[in-house]
Structure formats: structure tokens, C-alpha cells
Picture (cartoon, rainbow, N blue to C red):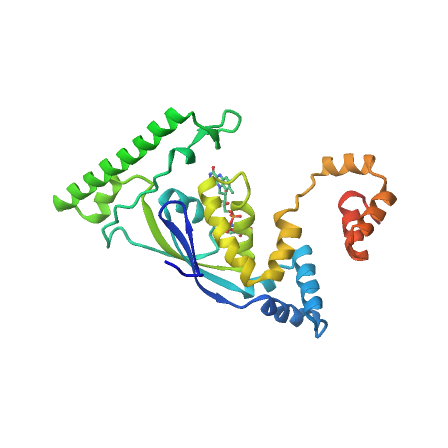
Length: 272
Ligand SMILES: Cc1cc2nc3c(=O)[nH]c(=O)nc-3n(C[C@H](O)[C@H](O)[C@H](O)COP(=O)(O)OP(=O)(O)OC[C@H]3O[C@@H](n4cnc5c(N)ncnc54)[C@H](O)[C@@H]3O)c2cc1C
């Protein structure tokens, strides 16, 4: 698939961009309905998008929609489909016989179980264990698929025979999502707390978003993806430790506009 709209993910998966409705300008046009004629130049458009992102004025971002065709293991789609605001259509394993295509991680891709976080795999397995584990996964998948074929030969309905298949088998789906909820998906699934396999898919989706709506992406990186929220306790400690005026000066020296300096101060201090 030598196609600029396809990014390969894991051993047999991909994310393919099917369609995009709208771009950076669509968001600006939609926002102008509420803010009037206002902005004109590309710089002003970028500033408006940045303002919308900073102030969580999210509805203009819903005016842009992306449709993707994705091939991913079922354990990845279980996590992906928790994002309820998208429209999804997936291969029917009642209608079609599923292909003999499983996620087969290489020994280097296998992670050891974290002792601190029960939900997380981290760190490398010793080489011997990793090689044996990769072989067990591959054998288990081959064995399960042979049983699936046996059940189909016996005349068992596809909708029941599939229950013998493990969650490493690949499935395919179309996924249509508006940009606001797509960015929410990316914030959660690009995060290092998300499972490495879905993160790989999120990076592919992000690459399409970055190139199709570059101004939105820049603001998203600045104000959402790489930003963090302070709790009330953290804020109180910082307010005690930080000298307000030195902080304001440093922010201005870092190139932040007057309004952004004010907003930054409000995050730490109770500005009247
Ligand atoms: C690292 C990580 C670990 C996770 N672990 C688990 C786990 O162990 N078990 C588990 O079950 N899930 C788990 N999840 C899934 C998680 O709880 C969410 O279901 C998933 O991330 C979707 O988030 P969302 O509801 O914000 O997104 P979406 O479903 O896309 O919704 C977007 C937003 O729309 C609004 N919304 C949508 N539907 C409703 C509704 N019915 N009612 C009210 N508001 C709504 C909410 O504001 C929501 O934030 C995990 C997710 C992550 C990222």
C-alpha cells in the first residue's frame, strides 16, 4: 500500500485516511458566527484558533470531521470503541469468515508486567523468556485458528465459531469522528498511560490530523497535549513559592502576549 493516506501500524495493521471534511479555515469561519467579522489574516486566524483552544470554546472544532479506515487487533479496538462519540462500522464476523491474521509481537515488543501499576506493562523481558513468550503467542493463535476452521467445517454458524478466536486477531472498521472529540481521543491515547499498541495507532491518527489542520495541531500541542492541570493543593503550594512579579516578567520575556501572561498568572494566583 504505497499511499500517502496509509500509515502502517504494528505488524499487520494500518490507519488509512478516507476523508476529511473542513480544515483550519472552517473552524475560523464557524467561530466568526459568534465573534463577528474580526479576523482576516492567516496570523489572526491562527490566533483565533489558539484562543478557542485555550478557552475550551470547543464547538467550532466539531465542524471538521475525519473518516479513517483502520485495521487493528480486537484488543486495541476494545479500547478504541470506548470513545462513544464516533460513528463506527466494523467487519461482521457473523457474515464473514475472519482472516488468519493475528498480532504477533516480536520478542523485543513484549513487555514485562509492572509491579507498581497493575494495569501497565513496562520494561524488557529477558531475551530467553521473550523468545519463548513470542512463540507461545504465535502457537496459541495458530491453534485457535485451526479450531475455528474445524468448527466452520462442522457447519457451526460463523457467529458462534468465532468465540474460539483470541483478541489478538485483526479486525477492520471505519471510524468517523469530529475534530473536537478526535483531539480528546488523542489526548487520552497518546498519553504514556495508554497501552503501547493503541498509542501506536493514535500516533498514526495524529500524523493525519497534524498535516490536515496544522494550526489546530499547534494549539492543541501547546494548550492540551503538552499542558497539565494543577490541582487546588498544587496551586496553593506554587502560589506560596513563586514570586508573582518575577513570574509575570519571565512569562513576558518568554514571548507570551499580555492576555496569555494574565491567564498564566490566573492558573497560580487568585487574581481579582
Ligand atoms: C489509560 C486509560 C485506562 C483506562 N482503563 C479503563 C479500565 O480499566 N476500564 C474501563 O472500563 N475503561 C477504561 N478506560 C476507558 C475510559 O474510562 C473511557 O471510557 C474512555 O477513555 C473514553 O473516554 P471518554 O468517555 O471521555 O470519551 P468519549 O466516549 O469519546 O466521550 C467524550 C466526552 O463526551 C461526554 N460523554 C460521552 N458519552 C457520555 C455519556 N453517556 N454520559 C455523559 N457524558 C458523556 C464526556 O464528557 C466524554 O468525556 C481507560 C482509558 C484510558 C485512557
